[in-house]
Image 1: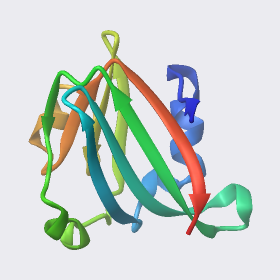
Image 2 (image 1 turned 90 degrees about the horizontal axis):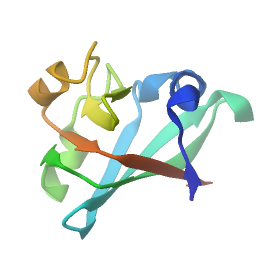
Image 3 (image 1 turned 45 degrees about the horizontal axis):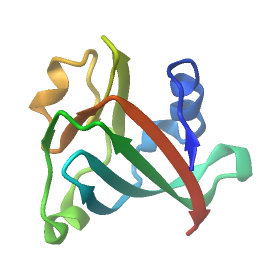
Length: 121
């Protein structure tokens, strides 16, 4: 896994078109403060081929997660939001402007660090 730094967030989201119309594959609780989210999306760096992207959040301080059976039914038309503010990363399904609004998402989490890994579709 590679760290996803604050300075790289915008280019990462642009590369995957903020995961618009992607597939939400899984949520795995590794420990009470570590959660891995797996998404499938088109990668503009690979001619828009579909790949799997794992996002691993550590130091999770707040979260609203969904059951695995609900994941295929999540509307991903607005993609995801990844924000870094006040020393924390925030993830939310949908388009949000700031870290405090992300808690309105059907699925969100806040954590102190973020890593990612690319895999095959």
